[in-house]
Length: 257
Ligand code: CP
Image (cartoon, rainbow, N blue to C red; front, side, top):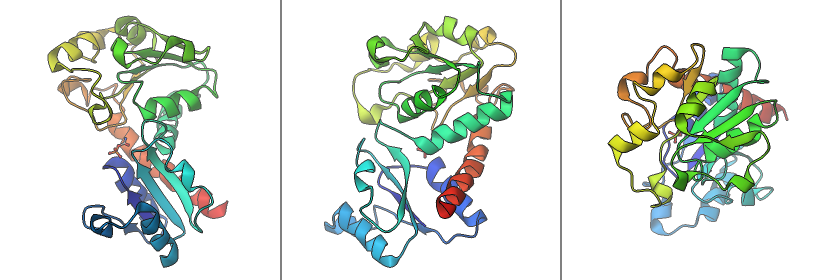
């Protein structure tokens, strides 16, 4: 398989690599900086080259919302979406749901708050879609500028202020502000943490069995106060571990499909 990341990544790229190696696959790691893209080769010709080399699976990340979708049936290899712009991040969503299931045994009847830059987050969109397949309640919270249009929300989804959202939820999923995708929000770190972040005051509102999640990369002292990253209710690093198991399952499923 080939890791073809045309946008930065640490977790997704390396957990797909670890997953593939645990399953005995050979992994090619493409590096945009040192590749022939720098000599003017197109992305399409780069992918055709990997096709000619005979890869079975291409794991692709791209900053455009629909580029990965547009590759359907164009090559002999199977494509795994490793993050598409601000549109979707399916493997992240599967590992997030797995982490919730591992914690609570069942996804039905859970209340999940997603807090932060919902409008520009592929993680939020994929999780809202996947969680809506279960009997879940989804609460969105964060700066008004970064919330989706209320009219676009499904019936299991509502927007609430952070304190109310955090107090009601079984899962608090924090997101970072996606500065690389927009300049809508002029972030002041201290006021963001005070108004929307999980800080030492807001942690007291959480239910005793609620869990804290973050897909990463996280910005310490912005969406989460640094010392809370490894709080006993945090599953942030558990998510990274579960990412390997989930991606092993995705790869196995693709090979046997
Ligand atoms: N969660 C996530 O997609 O992280 P990376 O951007 O580091 O892959």
